[in-house]
Image (cartoon, rainbow, N blue to C red; front, side, top):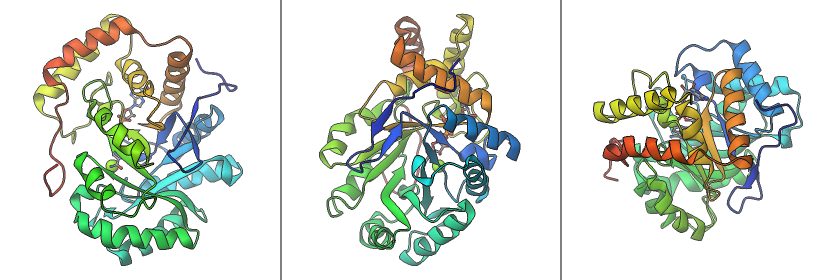
Length: 323
Ligand code: NAD
Ligand code: MG
Protein backbone atom coordinates (compact mmCIF):
# COMPACT_ATOMS: atom_id res chain seq x y z
CA UNK A 1 0.00 0.00 0.00
CA UNK A 2 1.25 3.50 -0.82
CA UNK A 3 2.66 5.37 2.14
CA UNK A 4 2.69 9.05 3.02
CA UNK A 5 6.14 9.58 1.52
CA UNK A 6 5.16 8.11 -1.85
CA UNK A 7 6.38 10.21 -4.75
CA UNK A 8 3.87 10.02 -7.53
CA UNK A 9 5.33 10.76 -10.93
CA UNK A 10 4.69 14.30 -12.24
CA UNK A 11 4.43 15.11 -15.93
CA UNK A 12 4.53 18.35 -17.93
CA UNK A 13 1.15 19.62 -19.07
CA UNK A 14 1.84 20.62 -22.67
CA UNK A 15 3.59 23.99 -22.79
CA UNK A 16 1.92 25.38 -19.65
CA UNK A 17 4.91 24.88 -17.35
CA UNK A 18 2.56 23.09 -14.95
CA UNK A 19 3.52 19.65 -13.70
CA UNK A 20 0.60 17.36 -12.94
CA UNK A 21 0.66 14.19 -10.89
CA UNK A 22 0.19 11.25 -13.29
CA UNK A 23 -3.05 10.47 -11.44
CA UNK A 24 -5.52 13.31 -11.11
CA UNK A 25 -8.43 13.40 -8.67
CA UNK A 26 -11.71 13.39 -10.60
CA UNK A 27 -14.21 15.08 -8.33
CA UNK A 28 -17.42 14.20 -10.16
CA UNK A 29 -18.10 11.48 -7.53
CA UNK A 30 -18.09 14.27 -4.91
CA UNK A 31 -21.25 15.50 -6.65
CA UNK A 32 -22.80 12.12 -5.74
CA UNK A 33 -23.01 11.06 -9.38
CA UNK A 34 -21.80 7.54 -8.53
CA UNK A 35 -23.77 7.29 -5.26
CA UNK A 36 -23.92 9.31 -2.04
CA UNK A 37 -20.67 10.54 -0.44
CA UNK A 38 -20.55 12.35 2.92
CA UNK A 39 -18.52 15.54 3.26
CA UNK A 40 -16.36 13.79 5.81
CA UNK A 41 -15.49 11.02 3.34
CA UNK A 42 -14.85 13.59 0.65
CA UNK A 43 -12.51 15.57 2.91
CA UNK A 44 -10.57 12.47 3.94
CA UNK A 45 -10.23 11.28 0.33
CA UNK A 46 -8.94 14.67 -0.85
CA UNK A 47 -6.58 14.97 2.12
CA UNK A 48 -5.08 11.55 1.56
CA UNK A 49 -4.77 12.13 -2.18
CA UNK A 50 -2.86 15.36 -1.62
CA UNK A 51 -0.61 13.81 0.99
CA UNK A 52 0.26 10.98 -1.41
CA UNK A 53 1.30 13.42 -4.13
CA UNK A 54 -1.87 13.99 -6.16
CA UNK A 55 -1.77 17.69 -7.03
CA UNK A 56 -4.52 17.85 -9.67
CA UNK A 57 -8.23 18.14 -8.91
CA UNK A 58 -10.94 18.34 -11.59
CA UNK A 59 -14.54 19.43 -11.16
CA UNK A 60 -17.39 21.18 -12.99
CA UNK A 61 -20.49 23.19 -12.11
CA UNK A 62 -22.38 20.37 -13.83
CA UNK A 63 -21.28 17.62 -11.41
CA UNK A 64 -24.06 17.11 -8.91
CA UNK A 65 -25.59 20.46 -9.91
CA UNK A 66 -22.71 22.52 -8.38
CA UNK A 67 -22.31 20.18 -5.38
CA UNK A 68 -18.95 18.79 -6.54
CA UNK A 69 -17.41 22.28 -6.72
CA UNK A 70 -18.65 23.16 -3.23
CA UNK A 71 -17.46 19.93 -1.63
CA UNK A 72 -14.09 20.02 -3.41
CA UNK A 73 -13.60 23.68 -2.46
CA UNK A 74 -14.15 22.94 1.22
CA UNK A 75 -11.87 19.91 1.13
CA UNK A 76 -9.07 21.89 -0.55
CA UNK A 77 -9.43 24.73 1.95
CA UNK A 78 -9.18 22.22 4.79
CA UNK A 79 -5.77 21.12 3.46
CA UNK A 80 -4.36 24.48 4.52
CA UNK A 81 -1.81 24.08 1.71
CA UNK A 82 -0.21 26.95 -0.21
CA UNK A 83 -2.38 27.69 -3.26
CA UNK A 84 0.44 27.05 -5.75
CA UNK A 85 0.80 23.47 -4.52
CA UNK A 86 -2.43 22.26 -6.10
CA UNK A 87 -3.90 22.58 -9.57
CA UNK A 88 -7.66 23.03 -9.90
CA UNK A 89 -9.61 22.68 -13.08
CA UNK A 90 -13.27 23.43 -13.48
CA UNK A 91 -15.49 23.89 -16.49
CA UNK A 92 -18.06 26.13 -18.11
CA UNK A 93 -20.90 25.86 -20.60
CA UNK A 94 -22.56 22.74 -19.19
CA UNK A 95 -25.04 23.01 -16.32
CA UNK A 96 -27.88 20.87 -14.99
CA UNK A 97 -30.17 23.42 -16.66
CA UNK A 98 -28.53 22.75 -20.03
CA UNK A 99 -25.73 24.02 -22.27
CA UNK A 100 -24.75 27.66 -22.76
CA UNK A 101 -21.38 28.52 -24.27
CA UNK A 102 -22.16 32.22 -24.78
CA UNK A 103 -19.51 34.75 -23.75
CA UNK A 104 -21.94 36.24 -21.26
CA UNK A 105 -22.71 32.91 -19.56
CA UNK A 106 -19.14 31.63 -19.32
CA UNK A 107 -17.94 34.99 -18.00
CA UNK A 108 -20.51 34.87 -15.22
CA UNK A 109 -19.90 31.16 -14.69
CA UNK A 110 -16.30 31.57 -13.57
CA UNK A 111 -17.31 34.01 -10.84
CA UNK A 112 -19.91 31.53 -9.59
CA UNK A 113 -17.37 28.69 -9.67
CA UNK A 114 -14.73 30.71 -7.81
CA UNK A 115 -17.29 31.57 -5.16
CA UNK A 116 -18.30 27.92 -4.70
CA UNK A 117 -14.69 26.72 -4.73
CA UNK A 118 -13.59 29.50 -2.37
CA UNK A 119 -10.67 30.36 -4.69
CA UNK A 120 -9.34 33.55 -6.32
CA UNK A 121 -8.45 31.78 -9.55
CA UNK A 122 -8.60 28.35 -11.14
CA UNK A 123 -5.64 26.92 -12.97
CA UNK A 124 -7.65 25.55 -15.88
CA UNK A 125 -11.10 26.49 -17.16
CA UNK A 126 -12.47 24.10 -19.75
CA UNK A 127 -15.42 24.36 -22.09
CA UNK A 128 -17.40 21.33 -20.93
CA UNK A 129 -18.53 18.77 -23.55
CA UNK A 130 -18.36 21.02 -26.58
CA UNK A 131 -19.98 18.48 -28.90
CA UNK A 132 -23.26 19.70 -27.40
CA UNK A 133 -22.54 23.26 -28.51
CA UNK A 134 -22.00 25.05 -31.80
CA UNK A 135 -18.28 24.50 -32.44
CA UNK A 136 -18.02 27.74 -34.39
CA UNK A 137 -19.36 29.57 -31.33
CA UNK A 138 -16.68 27.85 -29.22
CA UNK A 139 -14.03 29.11 -31.67
CA UNK A 140 -15.36 32.61 -32.27
CA UNK A 141 -17.03 33.52 -28.99
CA UNK A 142 -16.28 31.18 -26.07
CA UNK A 143 -12.48 30.92 -26.40
CA UNK A 144 -12.12 34.71 -26.91
CA UNK A 145 -14.19 35.23 -23.73
CA UNK A 146 -11.92 32.84 -21.82
CA UNK A 147 -8.85 34.68 -23.11
CA UNK A 148 -10.22 37.80 -21.39
CA UNK A 149 -10.61 35.83 -18.14
CA UNK A 150 -6.98 34.81 -18.51
CA UNK A 151 -5.95 38.45 -18.89
CA UNK A 152 -7.70 39.46 -15.67
CA UNK A 153 -6.18 36.52 -13.78
CA UNK A 154 -9.31 34.52 -12.99
CA UNK A 155 -7.93 31.54 -14.89
CA UNK A 156 -4.41 30.53 -15.90
CA UNK A 157 -5.11 28.13 -18.76
CA UNK A 158 -7.87 27.29 -21.22
CA UNK A 159 -9.15 23.84 -22.15
CA UNK A 160 -11.86 22.04 -24.07
CA UNK A 161 -13.48 18.70 -23.24
CA UNK A 162 -15.66 16.25 -25.10
CA UNK A 163 -16.25 12.63 -26.07
CA UNK A 164 -15.98 12.55 -29.91
CA UNK A 165 -12.34 13.12 -30.78
CA UNK A 166 -13.20 15.08 -33.93
CA UNK A 167 -14.26 18.11 -31.87
CA UNK A 168 -10.68 18.68 -30.74
CA UNK A 169 -9.22 18.88 -34.24
CA UNK A 170 -12.15 21.02 -35.41
CA UNK A 171 -11.48 23.64 -32.74
CA UNK A 172 -7.67 23.43 -32.65
CA UNK A 173 -7.47 23.85 -36.43
CA UNK A 174 -9.41 27.13 -36.15
CA UNK A 175 -8.23 28.96 -33.02
CA UNK A 176 -5.05 31.07 -32.84
CA UNK A 177 -2.06 28.91 -31.81
CA UNK A 178 -1.55 28.95 -28.06
CA UNK A 179 -5.10 30.01 -27.18
CA UNK A 180 -6.20 26.52 -26.14
CA UNK A 181 -3.67 25.11 -23.68
CA UNK A 182 -5.16 21.69 -22.90
CA UNK A 183 -7.73 19.15 -23.99
CA UNK A 184 -9.54 16.70 -21.74
CA UNK A 185 -10.63 13.50 -23.45
CA UNK A 186 -12.52 10.76 -21.66
CA UNK A 187 -13.24 7.06 -22.19
CA UNK A 188 -10.78 6.93 -25.10
CA UNK A 189 -7.65 5.70 -23.39
CA UNK A 190 -8.55 2.59 -21.51
CA UNK A 191 -8.24 -1.14 -22.20
CA UNK A 192 -11.53 -1.28 -24.12
CA UNK A 193 -11.01 1.92 -26.15
CA UNK A 194 -7.62 3.43 -26.93
CA UNK A 195 -8.57 5.66 -29.89
CA UNK A 196 -7.04 8.77 -28.27
CA UNK A 197 -3.61 7.30 -29.06
CA UNK A 198 -3.91 8.17 -32.76
CA UNK A 199 -4.56 11.83 -31.92
CA UNK A 200 -1.55 12.27 -29.62
CA UNK A 201 1.00 13.27 -32.33
CA UNK A 202 -1.40 15.93 -33.64
CA UNK A 203 -2.00 17.31 -30.13
CA UNK A 204 1.72 17.43 -29.50
CA UNK A 205 2.26 19.31 -32.77
CA UNK A 206 -0.26 21.89 -31.58
CA UNK A 207 1.55 22.23 -28.22
CA UNK A 208 -1.59 21.18 -26.37
CA UNK A 209 -1.44 19.34 -23.04
CA UNK A 210 -3.43 16.11 -22.79
CA UNK A 211 -5.57 15.03 -19.87
CA UNK A 212 -7.23 11.65 -20.21
CA UNK A 213 -10.20 10.92 -17.98
CA UNK A 214 -12.20 7.84 -17.06
CA UNK A 215 -9.53 5.09 -17.21
CA UNK A 216 -12.12 2.81 -15.62
CA UNK A 217 -14.52 3.67 -18.45
CA UNK A 218 -16.85 5.36 -15.94
CA UNK A 219 -17.18 2.18 -13.92
CA UNK A 220 -17.27 -0.43 -16.72
CA UNK A 221 -13.81 -1.61 -15.67
CA UNK A 222 -14.59 -2.04 -11.97
CA UNK A 223 -15.82 -5.00 -9.92
CA UNK A 224 -19.03 -3.17 -9.01
CA UNK A 225 -19.75 -2.29 -12.61
CA UNK A 226 -21.14 0.93 -14.07
CA UNK A 227 -23.91 3.14 -12.68
CA UNK A 228 -27.45 2.86 -14.05
CA UNK A 229 -27.02 5.86 -16.42
CA UNK A 230 -23.95 4.44 -18.17
CA UNK A 231 -24.39 4.89 -21.96
CA UNK A 232 -22.47 1.76 -23.13
CA UNK A 233 -24.27 -0.90 -25.17
CA UNK A 234 -25.44 -4.09 -23.39
CA UNK A 235 -22.76 -5.95 -25.38
CA UNK A 236 -19.94 -3.72 -24.11
CA UNK A 237 -21.25 -3.85 -20.54
CA UNK A 238 -21.42 -7.61 -20.65
CA UNK A 239 -17.90 -8.01 -22.08
CA UNK A 240 -16.56 -5.79 -19.28
CA UNK A 241 -18.41 -7.88 -16.70
CA UNK A 242 -16.76 -11.02 -18.06
CA UNK A 243 -13.34 -9.32 -18.00
CA UNK A 244 -13.86 -8.17 -14.42
CA UNK A 245 -14.89 -11.66 -13.30
CA UNK A 246 -11.84 -13.09 -15.06
CA UNK A 247 -9.53 -10.78 -13.08
CA UNK A 248 -11.32 -11.56 -9.84
CA UNK A 249 -10.88 -15.26 -10.52
CA UNK A 250 -7.13 -14.63 -10.65
CA UNK A 251 -7.17 -12.67 -7.40
CA UNK A 252 -6.78 -9.32 -9.18
CA UNK A 253 -8.93 -6.20 -9.41
CA UNK A 254 -9.74 -5.07 -12.94
CA UNK A 255 -9.65 -1.41 -11.81
CA UNK A 256 -5.94 -1.76 -11.08
CA UNK A 257 -5.15 -3.37 -14.44
CA UNK A 258 -7.21 -0.69 -16.22
CA UNK A 259 -5.61 2.24 -14.42
CA UNK A 260 -2.12 0.90 -15.00
CA UNK A 261 -2.84 0.53 -18.72
CA UNK A 262 -3.81 4.21 -18.96
CA UNK A 263 -0.84 5.41 -16.92
CA UNK A 264 1.78 3.86 -19.16
CA UNK A 265 1.50 6.41 -21.98
CA UNK A 266 3.63 9.37 -20.91
CA UNK A 267 2.27 11.62 -23.65
CA UNK A 268 -0.77 11.83 -21.40
CA UNK A 269 0.00 14.32 -18.63
CA UNK A 270 -2.53 13.09 -16.13
CA UNK A 271 -5.08 10.31 -15.93
CA UNK A 272 -8.18 11.55 -14.12
CA UNK A 273 -9.84 8.91 -11.96
CA UNK A 274 -13.10 9.54 -10.19
CA UNK A 275 -12.57 8.85 -6.48
CA UNK A 276 -14.89 9.09 -3.53
CA UNK A 277 -13.18 7.25 -0.70
CA UNK A 278 -9.91 6.85 1.11
CA UNK A 279 -9.79 3.27 -0.03
CA UNK A 280 -10.02 4.17 -3.71
CA UNK A 281 -7.30 6.78 -3.31
CA UNK A 282 -5.04 4.24 -1.60
CA UNK A 283 -5.67 1.58 -4.25
CA UNK A 284 -5.17 3.93 -7.18
CA UNK A 285 -2.00 5.54 -5.88
CA UNK A 286 -0.61 2.09 -5.04
CA UNK A 287 -1.44 0.94 -8.59
CA UNK A 288 0.42 3.94 -10.04
CA UNK A 289 3.46 3.40 -7.85
CA UNK A 290 3.49 -0.31 -8.68
CA UNK A 291 3.35 0.23 -12.42
CA UNK A 292 6.24 2.70 -12.40
CA UNK A 293 8.39 0.53 -10.15
CA UNK A 294 7.45 -3.08 -10.94
CA UNK A 295 5.72 -2.67 -14.33
CA UNK A 296 2.37 -3.98 -15.51
CA UNK A 297 0.94 -7.50 -15.37
CA UNK A 298 1.50 -8.30 -19.07
CA UNK A 299 -0.14 -11.70 -18.97
CA UNK A 300 -3.37 -10.66 -17.29
CA UNK A 301 -3.59 -7.56 -19.46
CA UNK A 302 -3.34 -9.72 -22.60
CA UNK A 303 -6.14 -11.94 -21.29
CA UNK A 304 -8.37 -8.95 -20.55
CA UNK A 305 -7.60 -7.45 -23.97
CA UNK A 306 -8.58 -10.76 -25.59
CA UNK A 307 -11.91 -10.79 -23.74
CA UNK A 308 -12.60 -7.20 -24.80
CA UNK A 309 -11.41 -7.65 -28.40
CA UNK A 310 -14.95 -8.07 -29.88
CA UNK A 311 -16.00 -4.69 -28.42
CA UNK A 312 -12.65 -2.91 -28.85
CA UNK A 313 -13.03 0.84 -29.52
CA UNK A 314 -16.80 0.63 -29.32
CA UNK A 315 -18.14 3.97 -28.09
CA UNK A 316 -21.53 5.67 -27.89
CA UNK A 317 -23.08 8.75 -29.46
CA UNK A 318 -22.65 12.09 -27.71
CA UNK A 319 -23.58 15.59 -28.77
CA UNK A 320 -25.37 17.28 -31.60
CA UNK A 321 -22.83 16.85 -34.39
CA UNK A 322 -21.21 13.88 -36.09
CA UNK A 323 -17.81 12.95 -34.69
P1 NAD B 1 -13.68 6.66 -13.99
O1 NAD B 1 -13.40 5.80 -15.13
O2 NAD B 1 -12.57 7.34 -13.32
O3 NAD B 1 -14.55 5.77 -12.97
C1 NAD B 1 -15.03 6.29 -11.78
C2 NAD B 1 -15.77 5.19 -11.01
O4 NAD B 1 -14.84 4.20 -10.59
C3 NAD B 1 -16.40 5.73 -9.76
O5 NAD B 1 -17.55 4.96 -9.48
C4 NAD B 1 -15.34 5.47 -8.72
O6 NAD B 1 -15.88 5.43 -7.44
C5 NAD B 1 -14.83 4.13 -9.17
N1 NAD B 1 -13.44 3.81 -8.72
C6 NAD B 1 -12.38 4.64 -8.62
N2 NAD B 1 -11.30 3.98 -8.18
C7 NAD B 1 -11.66 2.69 -8.00
C8 NAD B 1 -11.00 1.53 -7.55
N3 NAD B 1 -9.71 1.55 -7.21
N4 NAD B 1 -11.70 0.38 -7.48
C9 NAD B 1 -13.01 0.34 -7.83
N5 NAD B 1 -13.71 1.41 -8.26
C10 NAD B 1 -13.04 2.58 -8.34
O7 NAD B 1 -14.76 7.74 -14.51
P2 NAD B 1 -15.11 9.24 -14.13
O8 NAD B 1 -15.23 9.47 -12.68
O9 NAD B 1 -16.26 9.58 -14.99
O10 NAD B 1 -13.88 10.07 -14.70
C11 NAD B 1 -12.87 10.59 -13.90
C12 NAD B 1 -12.95 12.10 -13.79
O11 NAD B 1 -12.61 12.69 -15.04
C13 NAD B 1 -14.32 12.68 -13.43
O12 NAD B 1 -14.54 12.63 -12.05
C14 NAD B 1 -14.20 14.06 -13.99
O13 NAD B 1 -13.45 14.86 -13.09
C15 NAD B 1 -13.38 13.84 -15.26
N6 NAD B 1 -14.24 13.67 -16.46
C16 NAD B 1 -14.50 14.74 -17.23
C17 NAD B 1 -15.31 14.62 -18.34
C18 NAD B 1 -15.60 15.82 -19.19
O14 NAD B 1 -15.06 16.87 -18.95
N7 NAD B 1 -16.44 15.72 -20.18
C19 NAD B 1 -15.89 13.39 -18.67
C20 NAD B 1 -15.59 12.30 -17.88
C21 NAD B 1 -14.76 12.44 -16.78
MG1 MG C 1 -18.32 15.07 -17.57
